[in-house]
Each structure stands twice: as structure tokens, then as C-alpha cells.
Length: 484
Ligand code: NAD
Image 1 (tube, rainbow, N blue to C red):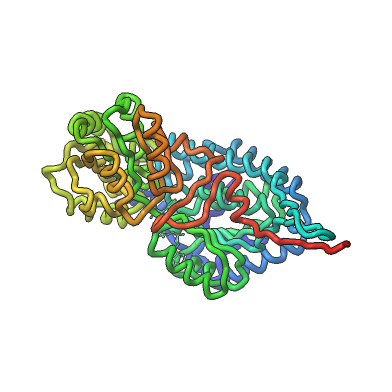
Image 2: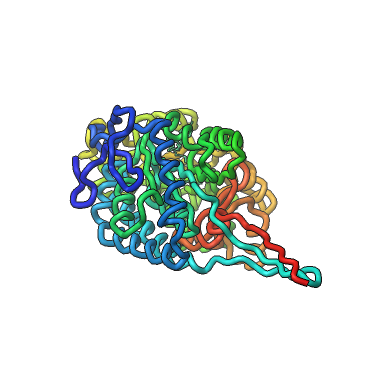
């Protein structure tokens, strides 16, 4: 399978601006989850490829890329954004076939990738240090410097958006990147490298090493030449990555999972809330770190909200990614088994609605019907653990304190929302909810690239997106001059 004109080979690593087979020479098959059939082969990089990539990144910092001014870096990123925009439809199709995402949602990811490049292109020359009032005779100021070589290990659920937010911010601040995409989703990472190169990004500033987590991923997180690791993925692997990077004391940003609540008070405008309540759970078939998998509703309106959500669930259609329905398949059979395992733990009497899998959903595809539970105990596994599939639970609460205790009652803390017309309560809840982002009378705020994002607790630490990511991808240096 080729995706000409701009991605003619899928089975290569991209290092120092060159496409070459991985050193081990054993390609991996990429499966189309809509059909269960093989889509193409990708490179299976190992520690030696990662080593080459780190060497190339380091060399680029000593060469053309390291010498580029902030304004020049910004200009290149802006041009990459334009290249991405020119290829939005091809990128969307590629992603849809690779991960099973409905075309419209994949297209939105491609546009978001372009938007990240525009944002970080514009921000590249806006980051500066400070002057600090100090003792007589001194002038003290801070410089913000890139870490150096940054490693980016990313998952399969939103490859383009996560490349945009982490690689975009790292390049804008002058780092050189080594990107390890997921073994379940490599194509848009490779396409991005091709487009970046076409836009004039110097060789070595971005290297891509597709492969298996235990091979390329662990080699990247443990590599002593990597000065900062940005990891997005599961809690279990995040802990391993942090431990590996700790061996050479490299800083790590962890963007992990979630069990994000929407808290609906009885005075909320339910008509406005309803599409947010459902869409936040089923977008990308629920395979979203910030999916809202818990809907907390004040007891007096619990049954009404559950019934209104159920009506919407019954209209949801699941089918092949290219059919562009409400939901596509899950990313893989393995993910389907995980989700089915969770469904088996739920009480069938609490299922209030399921969506439909359309007749022409292809045999061999990883389809799961979206499923809504109501009246669920907040301690139940479906209300505590990240399912990472199209499953939501509705939970009743009695008052503000009870709602807060349930909302904050998991080990995660990624995002949360609160629906109420009471302005004072909005302000109280925004402070009380344990999360990296809180939404008042909305959910997700359209996912704006400008909005700092990250977790508390098992959802991770560090912030990506927005201007704040630029601090994360730089270190400050204090300069104190004694001049009398
Ligand atoms: P995963 O942890 O299995 O894999 C993520 C990446 O880590 C992949 O590239 C994988 O190859 C690599 N990896 C696997 N084992 C490794 C190892 N031993 N050392 C180094 N790297 C290794 O996660 P996934 O299944 O791809 O993605 C789903 C998870 O990602 C969910 O938990 C989801 O919540 C989370 N996620 C979080 C965010 C966020 O911003 N907070 C965004 C998207 C996804």
C-alpha cells in the first residue's frame, strides 16, 4: 500500500533526513482494524536504530538546526503547518485506515496538527527569560534553553494531535526530536516527517523510529543521550519509562490515562449538556485519554438524564472507518478483548442502551457497540478503571460535597466538567475538582491547542499544549553578572 504522492515507503525508519530499512531488517505488519486485514508493513526499529536517531539529533543541534534562530524555527514550523493543511484529506484517510477512526474525526486531527504547527510557529520567538532585581552591583537574568535531544513516545489513539503538541513545542524551543510512534499507528508519523522535510526542517531535527514498545520504546527512554522524554500512553508503561529515564536523571513528562467526570447539577441546562455528555464518551470509540466515562447526575434528575442519553445511544451507528459513521472499530482485536472484558464485569440490568453495529461492518473488524450503564456504584470497576472503549456510566449524587467526593474518588485526575447555572457553585467546583483541566458548562472547549493540558495522580505530570509546554521543553539558566 502506498500513499503517494508524499509517503511512498511505509517500511522505513526516518533518520538524518533519510529513509532506510531498520537495522534489524524485520518489518512489522500494520492491520486495518475495520477489516482485520494487513494494511502495509512498517519498520521494526531496535536499540541500534534508536542510537542512530539520537546521534543524528545530537549532530543537528551542533549544526544547521542548532544554529537556527527562534524566528527561523518558527518560520519552518509555520511552513510545516501549511504542508499539513495541503494534505489533510490524505492524512485523514491514512489515519482512518490505520487506527479505525471515522474519516471526519481523522480529518479534525489532521487540521489540529496543522494548527499546532501554526501555534508553535508563531510562539517560537515569544519565549524569553526574565531580569531579576538583586543586590547592588549585580545584573541577573534568566535564559531559556532547549533540553537538547527530546524523546517522544506516543500512543495510537491521536497520533497526529500528540505529534503536534509534543514535537511541535519541542522543535519550536530548539530541541531535536526522536519520535517513537505506536506499533499500532505509524503512518501519519512517517507522513509528518516527510512533510516536515519538504517544508525545510533540517536533517536530524526530527527522526522517526517506528517499532515495538519493548524494543524501540524502551531503548529510547533508557538512552543516556536523550535529555528529556515526553511519554503519552498507559500508566503501566509510563511508570517504566519514568524509571528508565531516572537512570540517567532525564526529566519526563507523563500524559497518561483518565476516568474523567462530568458533574450535572439539577439546575443545569440539560438540553445544552446532552450532546457533550454523550459525545465526550463515544468520540474515537471512547479511546480518548480525556474521554468522559463517568456522568455524575444529581439524584432528582438521574433517571431523566440517563433516559435522554439512552435515546442518543440508540441512534449511534458503528461501522468501518471509511464509512464515516459515529464510531469506527476499536484500534485492534486486543483492545476489543480488553473492552469486552470490562463489559463482562458490568451488571446487564444496569445497561440502559446500546448503539448499533451496522450490517455492512466488515467481518474481522474490531467492533464494539457503545454501551451506557446507569445507577452505577461509584466504587464499581466500570466507574473506577479506564476502559478505553465506548462505555459510559451514569452515577447519582446527593449534593455538592457528595459530587466532589465521587468526582475526585478515582486515582486519576485528567479533566472534569461541571454543569450548573449557579455561578458561585461553578467557581467552587472549578477549585475543588482534581484535574488538569476543568470545564464549566461545556466539555473539552473544542480541544484548543492553546489550552495547557496534563494530569494529576495516575493521569501523569507535566503540561503539554499551549504556551506552557514551551516551559516544559526548555530549562532556565540564571546568569548573575557582578559589575559594581
Ligand atoms: P501504551 O502505554 O501501551 O503505549 C504507548 C507507547 O509506549 C507506544 O508507542 C508503545 O509502543 C510504547 N511502549 C510500550 N511499551 C514500552 C516500554 N516498555 N518502554 C517504552 N515504550 C513502550 O499505550 P497505548 O495503548 O498506545 O495508548 C492508550 C493509553 O494512552 C491510554 O491509557 C490513554 O489514556 C493514554 N493516553 C493518554 C493521553 C494524555 O494526553 N493523557 C493521550 C492519549 C492516550
